[in-house]
Length: 438
Ligand code: GTP
Ligand code: MG
Image (cartoon, rainbow, N blue to C red; front, side, top):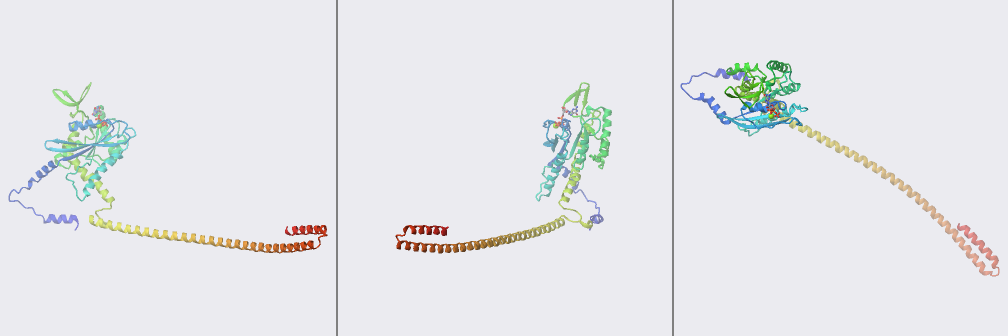
């Protein structure tokens, strides 16, 4: 059954009954209050503005205390977010206040707004991770999500810098922005009026959504509507006390007079304090949770593949989405596995082919070598036979020569008287012999 139908049926079935006497559930709001008081509150302020614009002084003035501060130099290498948490108590209410300074922003080349955006997202992510845990402890979780960004505008009297517009545009979907004109005592009243109008029209023209004080709660609708028309607040900060009449007031003293921080005709400090702390602190906390965090959470869950409705706008539960995603994942895994297996088989086949090719090549080389070897062996054998024949012929000739020598020797021994003639003959045979050998 669709949700609106179910709601209508429940309404029809509900009956208004009168109670016979006091039951006690009218104390529910009180129970809620005492629970909240015992739990304590957290409030996180992000201060964005160039170095020395008066951020720390304004925080000290707003909370009427001196927070530990550390002046920033103008030569920071990048924009750095510096959170500091303090435990404050007023009556029996505990407030865990975190002030985050965007150190180095707007200085020389450090004009990057990305570290600020990343910081805000990281706080949302931490909260989401806590929410998604099986064992959540949101009750005592230190919520560091930024509830308000006080954007300090330099009192130039001209117009907004493009850095201001770009930064506020990047931040407006992530945090409640309250723009304030800092050091408002340095700009004349008529210039201030024009400057405020110029800022508001520029913000509107560029589609920058700044925080609007809520007008849906009757109790504060009127004051909030009036205050919305005063934005951006032009503030002066000071913790110095100056005697005005017979009262000590927080003010800035100049040779020509005194600028009183809490004097509404001097600046909008009181309006800012009223709106930020006394009237709308809870709304800022709520807006952070229900609007900005919700948006972050939705995008994150969608990125993870979760959705509320399936095809044809049919509602789909988290369990179903999880099951579908799991099946999709397993299918994909199987597909990948099959691909990998196929790839492996192909690779093995390729390697096998390559090896066979190599083997064939080797075999051919072996055959060629074998043939060459046999050819050479045959040639050597022929040579050997030829030499063998030559040797035989030589031996035959040698034997013939030796026989002739023997005959000659015999003839010589039978005719000793004819020695001279024989000598000539012998030398004649020697010359024949030497000719034959050569
Ligand atoms: P970093 O943290 O170093 O970036 O500076 P910051 O923005 O915190 O400024 P800080 O509050 O330290 O003030 C810097 C100087 O401006 C100090 O000398 C303050 O006295 C002076 N100052 C602060 N608020 C005002 C103001 O409303 N008007 C004027 N005229 N001077 C102010
Ligand atoms: Mg400071």
